[in-house]
Length: 220
Image 1 (tube, helix red, strand yellow):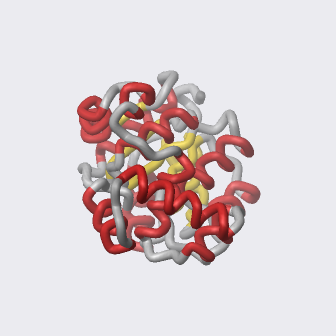
Image 2 (cartoon, rainbow, N blue to C red):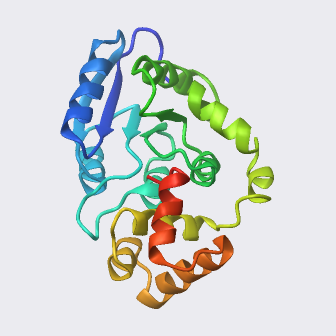
């Protein structure tokens, strides 16, 4: 945490240039905040964090980088491992309750929906720096409350494991099983098995049904 006289240095990552610029300009306009580095991919974010010290990380969840780039739960896990004392805020279009619950379990400092007014991001940033736990924007809080306030409650109705959730998300984004295996550093056989398991649990019989389900359930 920082005191009132210190500037909070922020590193921001988003794969959409317009969004990245808008977030950065907004944060720079807030008293006490300064964006010191920007990145357009998971790999770019890791590089930026090596070069620039910061007190706050803000990242998109789904970023379309190279096939072997990192995003999603894998990227957040890495950030939490490399920078355990630096708050991470996820700014995302994802509304799937399973993924949002997993992010809170990973210990992110804040969750904000991209469909919310941008001042919601500033509010969550300030709360994340001042309060323990995960600061939730209004719409994210509403979504989680609707689907179960704890992971145990949610898992009663959500059958997919964290790894299956990530495989379904990446498949819905257009990655092949081989590309998902490369990105997640797992074997092709493992990814294919997890994809089949997810489809079986969801009672889906085709790739088209899986992609439609992912879209309807807010995976991307």
